[in-house]
Length: 96
Image (cartoon, rainbow, N blue to C red; front, side, top):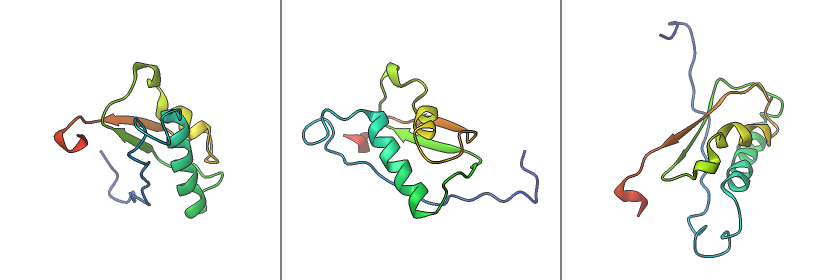
């Protein structure tokens, strides 16, 4: 349960290109694309070295090889490495 004085904010978002499977990004890993996206947010909001409450990444489908993907992405960014991260997945018709 949140403390009534605790502030919560979503500071921004970033998408990766939808062409990964078919074109320019076919040889780029999920980790490389997500790290670039996170790094763009870190730079845009001057978050270098900051500890955030949570970083959440969403994907329609992920590989079993990417079991700790969000944590690895945070470690590959300029955020403080103590920043926690989590993966979210929701498969739905809009992903088609």
